[in-house]
Amino acid sequence: MKTDWLVKSLGLILVGAIAACSTDSIAPEATNSEVAPTETAAPDQPEGSVEAVVTLTSLTSDIIHNLDEDVLVGIPGRAILTEDERFAGIE
Picture: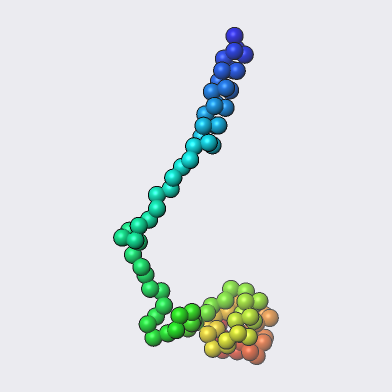
């Protein structure tokens, strides 16, 4: 009696799982009227330029300094950076 109930329950769960996996769900598509365009770049700067960068690791501080030392405005207070002359004056 208990096994009959268990078999029916498992069969119902299996059928539900198969039905859930086999149905096609259609995601609603956004129309042009729903999405408003936004501008992220400042009008006086070319697209993709950066004014200031604050790094969180000594590795990224070194990479940014090698790419463009003028944009680096903040570095972590690690001894490896505070002892380096290239990072003097940057906190």
